Length: 369
View 1 (tube, one colour):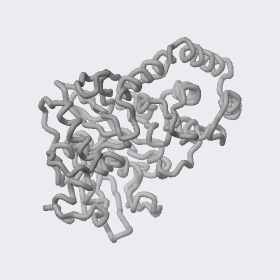
View 2 (cartoon, one colour; view 1 turned 180 degrees about the vertical axis):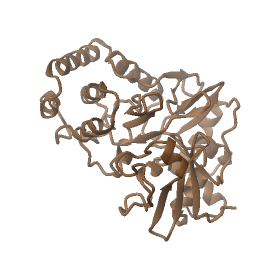
View 3 (cartoon, helix red, strand yellow; view 1 turned 90 degrees about the horizontal axis):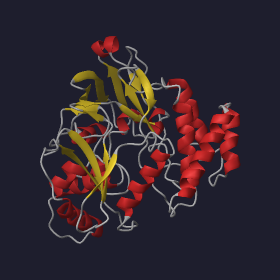
């Protein structure tokens, strides 16, 4: 049974952040808790400053939600699972309010926010047969109608984003996301993404920790990324570039200039501008065109008490895409000249930028790609 909840509590590491309430079919309000106003931080630097006011998102982009809450919602693979899970129980995904959908994510979502009351089951801590999961995932993708444990797939991957199927696993004290090939991927996509991450690291990029998980079905291995939004038993607050700017990543309307401007406004790490420049260079030279605003995030650093770029993630070559999701100085198919045009426009240190360009080209040309 899915209850029609109209008000939920938003928490971070068991502390109440605030409250979301559905006022009508098109209006959702958010207000910080008074205690959070004293000791907490802004969970969305531009849209939700620390203030004892009631916030409304008048934009229709996220159906009344602010982007930071919409980040918790699944898309791609996760949305497929949520739709199937609900259909099995006799509910229409499109007929549910955003508030109800958040209760179906509960504490299983990406990032640091959790939602109560929760209408879902927590991911259990146990071992899984990845090949058995791969078979169930293939059944979902092929729509063969064969019997699978859909409830388990939803618990493990229902909060996921992106097109590629994935599961969220806890291995000991560590939290991992393990990816499986989607319909357009080669069976070797796991090792290809692992290689891409290693190359990015050699270029000096702060890359998320990754490894290959063994598989009999996919002999080259399944790509796994260690979650940077989980540290020990705590959650780190993460917000995507798209959410910060209250725009959907499904509409390619951002330029790398926007990323640099956000860094300038909110980042507490002064090295983030050159880090972003490294990522832009790598994506252009390597051919990672899936560089949309949800594939770039900021993480709140509780020690520094501010936002900084999160580790890089979803790094892979995308030959099936004609243009970059995020343009470079207005160009969807940018050249090295466009990269330097960004540097000059933003008045970045040109020598450091030239060194980054040369190092990136050297790493990529010295590898057997």
